Length: 102
Image (cartoon, rainbow, N blue to C red; front, side, top):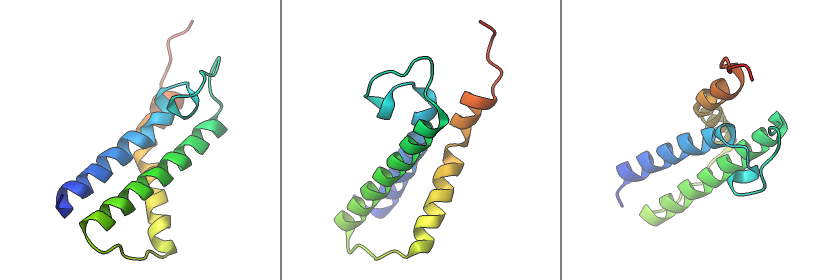
């Protein structure tokens, strides 16, 4: 796999993983269903966990392509901000959208 498809794969998976906690009611996607709804704390914990998995996947792809470069704290701060930005559509859909009464 060359560099360009690997980058697009990681970005697509990050976009999917960032919105996943907001579109389902199961704990960590496969766990028991929470009734009536998961609290925001669970969703943020899932968001951070899925973000860590995306970083690990990116590191694995980078190591597979070539030499893995060490990253400083700046990389992780930018990754966290990007992941929160990717999660914005799911957050809006879950918390800011007008739900029908009932």
